[in-house]
Length: 97
Picture (tube, rainbow, N blue to C red):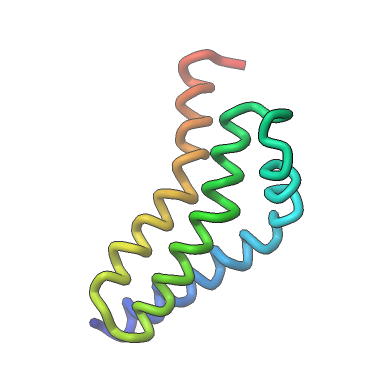
């Protein structure tokens, strides 16, 4: 695998993990009481607080090992991080404020 692609995967995954660490208290409060929040908030917290960082860690490990699977995992992590934003934008476009 290209060294620049490896560095891009490692740096962007590290940033994703850092952003997850920044929102960790909010995510844990949301996941602690799933019945008190809306389903969208729960799924967003699950994706951004659990699934996204896990995929980012796996992408870092695979990129360091030079595996091509790292690119696919990195792409999945990006989808997990940007899917709630895209869903919110589509909901605003359909329903308005």
